[in-house]
Image (cartoon, rainbow, N blue to C red):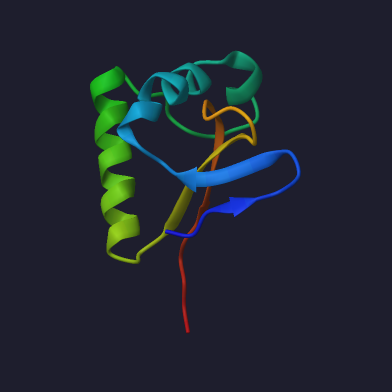
Length: 86
């Protein structure tokens, strides 16, 4: 998986360790008001989501990164590339 850095941000592979931070984002009203997405019912559903994305990355179906500050590994967002075609 490609890791990308800018002056202030780092894109790194999503991991199961990100579940708590991702869960917090998915229930943050300031974040979710801009995203048309169903909230996960619990942490287990979010863990399954992370596992599914990790498997999709492994099989080359998508590219999915955790976004974090350059000096802090805590997830502050995610970004995905998908629906590739030749």
